Image (tube, rainbow, N blue to C red; front, side, top):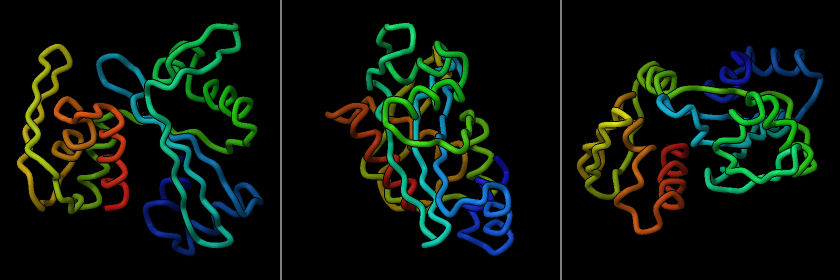
Length: 185
């Protein structure tokens, strides 16, 4: 986990690159990153991260949380509950490997708190918030209040930005688009 995050965050520094190559012996790594909701435990953010060590680039594919998945027991479930249903993110990776015909080398599971602390650690993220974001859900302890415009988002505000979806016409699909903007920033 540390080596994978080190590699992605520190933009292919020599120390991280050496550690990853030595760890796997591969030039290309696939990582399933699953962001869990604090209250429900659902994996509302699923990213397939491809790290190409030979070319020095990272590609990310987002998997929408409402995607249906054929589970090994013959049932269909939403992918955001599959990690819990199957017994963990490693089991979800096994199902995705079989379904997508890919190899997943590592899994990373993180909470909103971990994400928030990570964003604080890197000094925040400059982002253009596309619209005023106002939403409250007391059951989840979720309170989102961001104003439109360019700003530096620290952990708490970054969580609000990536979780917001209620004001978008396209709901979760628009939230995925906002998450792409955040990842790029």
